[in-house]
Length: 270
Ligand SMILES: C[S@@+](CC[C@H](N)C(=O)[O-])C[C@H]1O[C@@H](n2cnc3c(N)ncnc32)[C@H](O)[C@@H]1O
Image: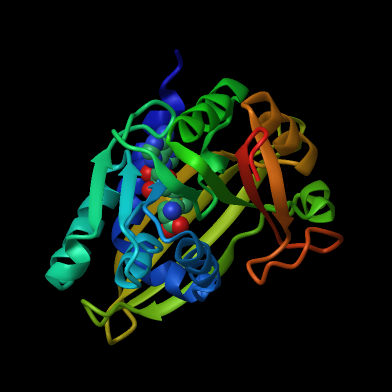
């Protein structure tokens, strides 16, 4: 099997890990966290997060009283999560279990009322066999009556075809640990025929005098999805879709929706 994309993903997350929490606190504003928290509280847990990264979603849910199990392959992302966990009270730490492993194949050893994959995790799986392997593994982790919920973004087709590939500064913040200014520039280079795009990111770190003291860059290939193919993939892997939202405010998916957020249960369930 070709593991080159896995190696590239690992290298990408090694660079992005120390920036991740503070960059995405500004970019995502926590709207998805409130959504996943509502779902977790409604089912009561336990919850498996596949691709839990630094714990951006996992930690607030654990703080809300939900028993959380995180599965993650990137050691760099897990190290950030473990460092954050160390700063939590024992009551929160005791609610969190972590497994380092591949969400397409690793067994967490138990079944869950809710399996979630927030933050565009599926975009990392470029090939159909990988997408199916992930869904099959998610299915194996569901308790009777449990649900899988995940999100991917909705591509803006006009932008894809125009394919501007321009660099955009999407982060400009002061790092809470170093006090230094962190600017992130990003661009996507599209391969429309393959539903793929290469994400390129650059971080520029400046001292108080505005001098650049460090620069880092990383890039990775990602895949985007249409509603039709997600419906087919889920059906192939024995799921039945119960909800298809277009935003984390739980608006139905439709024209202009920024996201595709899917809730699915084992075929025949409710
Ligand atoms: C965009 S981050 C999202 C992290 C977290 N869910 C969030 O919402 O902040 C995607 C995460 O999925 C992880 N990931 C990608 N492929 C994976 C795989 N095959 N097995 C386990 N984790 C994987 C990455 O290492 C990364 O931490």
